[in-house]
Amino acid sequence: MKNSFLMRNPSTLIFLTALAAFTIVVTLLSEAFGLGLISTSFVKTLGKTLCLGLVAVAMDLVWGYAGILSLGHFAFFGLGGYMIGMWLMYERTRDIVISSMADAPIPPTTDEITDAIGHQIFGVVGSSEFPLIWAFADSLTLQLVLVVVVPGALAFVFGWLAFRSRVAGVYLSILTQAMTLALSFYLFQNDSGLRGNNGLSGLQNLPGLEAVPQEVVSIWFLWASALALGLGYLLAAWIVSGKFGSVIRGIRDDEARVRFLGYSVEGYKLALFTLTACIAGIAGALYYPQAGIINPAEIAPIASIYLAVWVAIGGRGRLYGAVVGAGFVSLVSSWFTGGQAPDIPLGFYTIKWVDWWLIVLGLSFVLVTLFAPKGIAGLFDLVSDRKWPNRHGADLGPDAGALREREASE
Image (cartoon, rainbow, N blue to C red):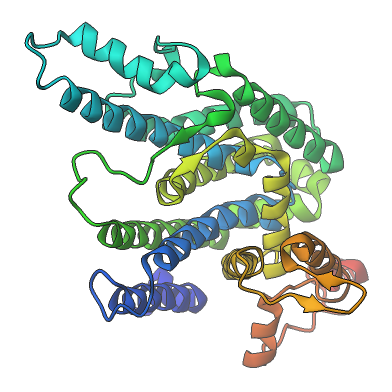
């Protein structure tokens, strides 16, 4: 028992315990199964926050541990949402169409039902035919597979092209941002097959469960989001605690040296980039049914920049820091932009937080980067009085003085 993974990684055990306790408390205080002290809308906000925590873990893996500043991971998040959204919208529309045709004197044929569904979904963009990408929209199993496959495939192709060309640093960040921008521009087009700017809506209505109250559905999604975050965190902690984690940290610190030691740097980068894209897709598939709608604006490059800000504020290179940063900024953002933060009258000008929130967020990012590079997670070190080993002067290489002063400070 003492040699188990969780016993050797107490921070992971603490996080999972805290996550379970949080889920239980919210359930007991909810309108569905508890005292009714937490509204259904806020339960959905908390569920969505857990999903953002999961995509932040993915971002921390690829940026905090491997040093790859991806400004496109929210595109994978959005693609996961689109994949599950297609099934939700198709099945909900199918139920509506069948119900409306139930009293027809002549029972409708399968083709008539399909045409009616297509008209209901795509009539807003002047079409009634199903695009090829909707071929599996009637199968929940296949769409769930696509939640992982589509973001993973895009990340694999992009990563293979970028990493084999040894694109790194700011150039790679620009390329990931360009990928995200191109994808969002494509989805804005009406002929993209995903309803253009209208996006997919009504995703909060689960097919076949219309009689189930939304307060119950919100708790179900909260449980699913907590489970996904817990499993994703456990997987990420297992990855970074082993040899794979040591190699990707080495790539972050000195890529040339890792390559000289014989490791396939491009292979490690590609594997991690693809894996984190799949994790982001799962997070998006759980997020958007709680949000109720997804459109191309969700995939805009600014969303991926926000994701990087969350991780930086929470504490880059620490998994729990990424979750804390995403949760903190998400909840504070909801408070400021939801009109709950009181305006501040100055006489000559009134500060409205809805307009000033992005400026506050940007300023926070700059201040954290300059004065608190460990982010919010660094506060846990102060509380726990965590001591880092004094490595200065230690001979950790085959020759005396192999450890350089610059390395000792990292």
